[in-house]
Structure formats: C-alpha cells, structure tokens
Image (cartoon, rainbow, N blue to C red; front, side, top):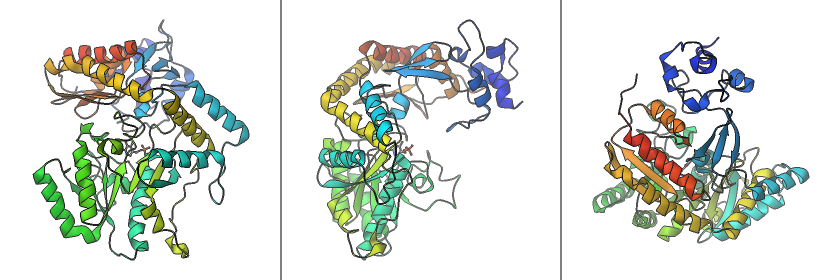
Length: 462
Ligand SMILES: *Cc1c(COP(=O)(O)O)cnc(C)c1O
C-alpha cells in the first residue's frame, strides 16, 4: 500500500488512528458518508493513481471527492454541498451546468463531435471565429484554435517570431514579458512567466532565455523599458502581457494607462504587442475584454479559460490583419507551422458559441458589476484583520493579500470546513466566482473569508 493510500485510509476514513501527521489537513468535508461511511470505491482506488497539479503528493491534503455541480455549488461524495469561489480556475462564468450550453453540446454530439481542421472546416468553428472577430476591437480578425491556454500562447509566440522571418527580418526571437506574469506551463511559456513565481531556476538549461521587465507603471519604469527596447529591439519579436490583471502570478492589478504605454512603446520600437486575455477575457475584469477598458488593440490576443463557459477545453489565438498578411504568400514555407490534433473541436466550439449566446442574451456584464460591489462590501472587513496588507477588487475578482501564508494546506481545510471552495496561493486569498452567483452564495463566500482569516492563528507548518 502506497503512503498516499495510507493517508486516504487514515482515521478520518476508517476509524483507525491516523498513521501520519498530514492527516490533520484532511478537512471534515472529505469524510465519507455523513454517517461515517467510507468514500466511494472509485475514489479509494483512483487516488492512488492520479497525479494532481501543483501538488506535493506526499503532504498535500487528499483531493475532495466531487460528484455533481450546479450553478455555483459543488456536491461532495458525502452529500455535502459547498459554495464555489473559484469557478474551476475562472472558467465557469455562467455557473455550472448551464442548460443552454448543455443542449448545444448534446446537439453537436449527435451530428459531429469532431472533425479535424486539417483541410476541413465545420460550422461551429466558422461561426465562432466570425463572432470572435466581430467582438474583438480593431482588426483582430483571424482566429487560430487550440485546446489549451498555454498552447494558445505558444502559438502567439510562434506567430510573432515567424511574422518577422516572413517579413524578411532576422534575429527577432526573444520576448519581453513582465514580473508577476503567468502565461502557462509548457516549455515556451514557462520562460515568459515571472522568474520567481515560475520555474526558471528549476528548468534552467531547458528554457529559452527571455527578457523579464517591470511593467511601465510610472515614469521611471517606462523610461527603463524604453531604453531596453531601444538597446535590444533587433532581437525582440514581441511584448507579452496579461492586460489589467496578472492572474496566476498573484492577482496583481495595473491601470489601463500601462497598456497605452506598452502600445506606444511597441509602436515606437517597431515590435509586436501580444495581450494574453486567457484570464481577463469574457467579462472577468468588468469589460468583455480588458483591452477594451484601455482602448488598446494588440497585434495578437489569446483567449481560453471562460471561452466555453467552463465546459470543454478550447483556446484561440487571434491575429490582426497586419500579422496575418505576413503569412499570406505563394511560399509554402511562410505558412504558420502549427496544428493541434483537436484544434477547433466541434463540441468545444458549440459550447463556446452557446456561451457567447448567453453573453448576448443575459445581462452578464451588469452581473459582473453587481458581483464587484458585493465583493467590495463583503471583503472590506478584511482590511482591519491582522496580517492583511491589501484588499482589492476589479470586476468579478476579489483579492485579500496577507503578509504571508504559513500553512496553505491548513487554510484550505478551514475554508472547506466553512462550506466554501477557496484556493489560496502565494500570499493571497481570492474569489473569482461565477458571474451568475446568487447574492446569498456570494455573501457566504466573503463571510467565510472574513471568518477564517479572523480566526487565523498564523501558525507555522508542522
Ligand atoms: C491559465 C492561463 C494560461 C494557461 O492556460 P492553460 O489552459 O492552463 O494552459 C495562460 N495565460 C493566462 C493568463 C492564464 O490565466
């Protein structure tokens, strides 16, 4: 029996004494049945074979067995229902199981679940590309589909590098990205993540060397970036940024003016500007796309996370006419050399089209504004709590930053005990709920954060 299964079968499950101290982190919510029954057999067997993301498998709390979702609620195997504060990594913007998306996917499953885009095109991909081009500002009008955010960013980077090659300019293979940024977990994208938060050190030697700068927030940092671009423009293919909110790097906010400065600097030094809207796209920051809040049109833009309303994996890299034109040629070597097997999957595109219907038919952005004020009000009491250094809200993103979090496993367990799913990381506790979350559920989320942080003893890891 592996050590992990020993954890899964510890006292909390079987009534026998816990074999390891880590069992303290097992929250009440993952107890088996409400009358102490064992967790389901699929869980007991599977937990020994599944490798979970970003988790030290030895010491992390065992995953919570989930059996159902609906709206902003998640039902656990023991029948307990918890309120979801994360919307499954920010994807489930309409809440879980929206019937309009479910019906569209079911219809598509009947006619054609998938056909490759190698030499073929189907209605769902065509309609989705047309709609994205119409929604996005400027002439962002050519859509390349992929199946994950990281790959969408990889494609954006390849587009930028090949844009210069196709234009007859050699040597432009590097990117400028920013401290606090996050663009994915693949080899290419890790190299443009924040060097401390990311895995630059661990994977040194594997990763290409990129240029990580400070965002141009003021005169000094703007001048520094201007100098950097002046010195190295001939090796830089593009500038890559998450507009308005840097998400997985710490939920850090910046002003629209920063994006206007980046557009001006990219133009002055003749380089491409890439906005990674994988987190910010589809209403999360209050506008449909963050670039619209700044009135800035990037040369390339990526979307994913909420694209299908949190139902199926799909991403897109959208290029302006100018970028696409550099690939438009009689020369086969000038084609974009990329093509994921499942690109433009018809089920995923049907889900995305249905999700866009909902943005058209239902008052989503007004709901985001309502979530924003409720987050402001509900999280305000955190300001006076010990260890809290900042409380910030933008759109449907609420962040409480602490001076540090000593024991994140324990903190997560206490949120579960309070009946909510909240997933703190680094020094922050945050909420990114569904835009459709009922006011009561949102109050339960903010109330749980206030209560749990107020009771925080700031203990050190065992
Ligand atoms: C999540 C995220 C990615 C990576 O997307 P995956 O689908 O996890 O590969 C890239 N950029 C940003 C801004 C993200 O939030």
